[in-house]
Length: 326
Image (tube, rainbow, N blue to C red; front, side, top):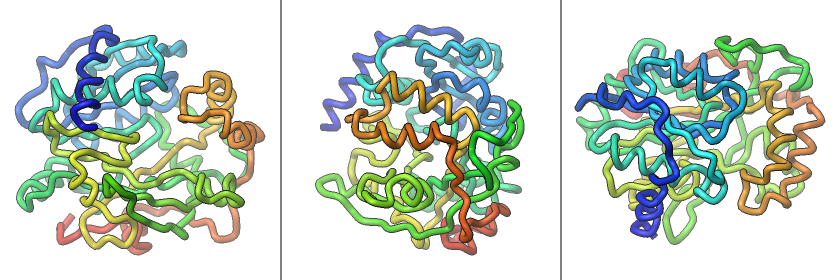
């Protein structure tokens, strides 16, 4: 399977048109961030500021046929290399064929973040210690990947009633989250972790929890050209990488991906994706989910927690420092 997926990525390079290639600036010790985006001009200003503050030195983006100014925004950034494609997101393994090629070519031997535009990584001590500090610790301890829990953020009222401006910290308008329950199991044959629970399961899949979203990811990896993500960034090959994270409660170093899906733009995006049918293997099965988001639900409930920062997430057991001073 790994050879097949790597070969898909090599072939997929023909689908990518370079728009702004600044990869000559990538150095031996660069920390990279790779992402596939479509119509994310609202989120990207804060996304870029957040990861620059953490220490990302170069971004590799694939723009999948945006029409909201995303490509122009990214092409103008001095530390962004941009490729464009109008090919099918679904047929490219939801963008993984494209981003895997960029990782094969540019990320070998480097620490690489793989995140979506609505994911903001935090880790123990992220307020004062950057990614270079973090990856030096991982290197010293022979750790090749760091896992993270994807934590959905949401407002107190209907998701369509909040106001958000580009560049604003999304936490200001999405200050709440579910601290639990979360459950973790392992799946064969890849030994990949499967964490479920949280607000989306509670609000949208209460009657069918097995259909709830997968919440574990491996976003930070010391990249080797033979590595490949299998299912979003939830699972990898070689399969030993999947044991870098055991979910909430794992005592090893881990982070949290603050998931800003439920900004007001989620309503428009859900209506579009329901028609495009590009985001699920069986998109017809998720029509009710899209309809529920389009209806601008209230996700807050009495057990919702207000986000207070990284120390709070550690105290709740949602991420751990695993011996790192942070």
